[in-house]
Length: 417
Image (tube, rainbow, N blue to C red; front, side, top):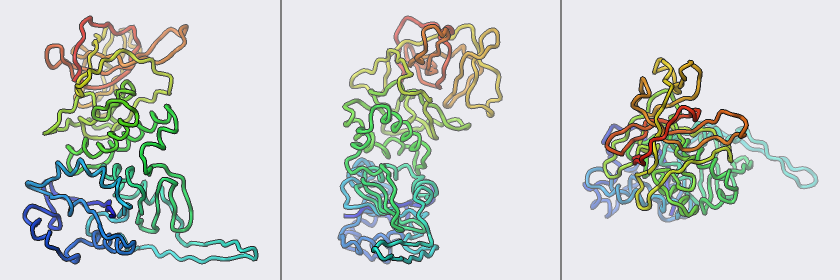
């Protein structure tokens, strides 16, 4: 079978397009329906499937019962397997919604070839391939969070761009104008190619991977966990480690050192069926970025991650001393500077959701410190900023860095949730 990767288009909250399968039409649809009743993008996908002589086509809005009393909650967890097992994925890259279609082009490409006396052939094309622009950067399809999982797990994908068709598989990208490009987002046995690249490269990939995903759009914010669950499960199993909402135990300390990527504060997502800890970026909306710490430069602190508990870290908290936050216009800065009593810059804080005017109610959790020469004097600690919400229980509110002389450890261990 072939799987379709496509954009639904802009929908109102709770809107279910008429072409979807619902409890109201499932009985009738099981008896058969006309392809003419489907939107153009779906009809184009049918043409491609027939052209490839593949009998079955999987489209999410048709094969998953949508709306009230649908089976989305159960089927969404199986989507990973749908794309991983498909003969190929057809990506409607140029289609902005279900009605746009992707087979009709606005650009007309013409080709000629010249053969010399030795038999060598040179092809000349009026429209040169630009996979990075046409697929990676400008395609609305690849701004969707769900599409990241669809693309990474597909064995092979045919991208129907506005000017060219691109073939992508584990060997790279092949363009309609016969150009090629090495590109390893498509790994038929994901993440095997990744882990052959080494420890440092794996860390870099995971950070850039999550940064990219966090910036992508979702119709429902509560899909932030499930839309990537297939990929995180595969990575977890390949690393032989535990994973909690985008935080891998093997890379626990580095994974915790994320911060919001823009000026706008993040918003807490109100999940209904899961409880996401405050120290996971999946608990919030909007994009993130990780601290830029070179491989080998982080000396980690002790953090306990209890077996069987995906929501809790156990550690000590630290009190700020002889320092304060610099007065800044909240809307103009991402990082708040920390100053000592002499008004010297000794660190910074980036808040996730709620800002603060002082450090009186804040505590720090030491995640690690930068490796430095013993004789260099000043040492910098990387910290989570936490606030108390119950006895012996704290929540994350930000992240930062500070010179170690301005923190004092409290003796009792607490829970960070």
